[in-house]
Length: 449
Image (cartoon, rainbow, N blue to C red):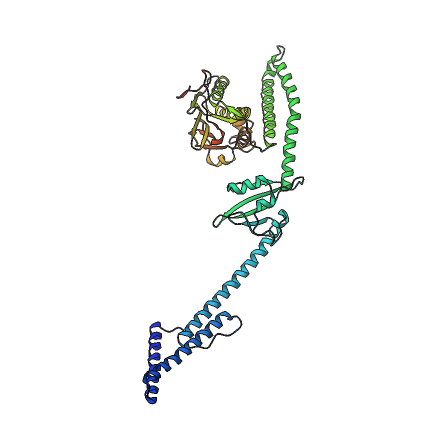
């Protein structure tokens, strides 16, 4: 146990005085007082230097030799260093045990794990990651992972730094292997990269898409024939009155089936490629004017439809796809808004980009349904959707169209107070030059009703 430092300093002072006193007595005895004091102090200094040398030698080789047997302050120093050394050894062994356990646990994981530093250089990886990515221990440590895979999409994924979504790529050209990457940031710019082999899932998704596309294509012709015969039967004067109702219902259902098939074909076409669309400049004001005109004509004036154009900027994109997405949103609003309700088509621009929104005064949607609205065939009220002729694919088509334009769909709704569906386009999609407006374009600084 260490002594009080004030007691140690007092003891050291008394020791120096004692040594000086003994030296003075020896000096008086030999007739040289100051030489006696100096000699005694020199001997004490030599002893302290010997203790210091012994202490330093033990520090250099403390794993091979026992600590020196020293008293006083030197003994306290040896005791402190010994205690720190034992604590360090304990923590070192503990960390080594934890690291071995981590290596054993990650080695048994079905997914690969790669640890990257802020420069996206490899710090560590487990056995599965080495198998999936072809990494080699020791030789690949410190190398940028993007330079090893050499896939542009993967390099952009790491550079962009947005790891809320995963990335699927084929790391080797000509091979069917498909890998999914999911980043998990930690520390100061460091990253855990999870790697999974999703080849089987990708093949199943491709088979599903092909089946849907082929089935939809094959259904199109017979549905057209059925619809044609039903229309002919319904127009016939000899048709008994008791059959007119069922025939009209069959016509309505065949038209609904035709719409579903058309939507499935369009969705399959959109899913066939994830490449960004370049397109051409689109006069958004004119497009919204056309949408309003078609919506009013189809609804026969059941709703109050207004257009608000708050900026003259155009949009760079595929005209057909953008028209399809905007029409799906406007059509949904008309289907689910009661007669006499209000629908607003709005276009505005701010520092974040261009924005198109469809707001309505319909019944609204409860919060638990919002995350799933863009799923295929998902309906908040299936019975009502069937009555309105909805296919359940419109919002899925909108989502895919926006993804191919680098945009995103945001949905806000409150039960009893209507809904708002907004498409947010990046600034790079805006056409900065003012678009020449005509009388039919629908552009006005205020709402056009």
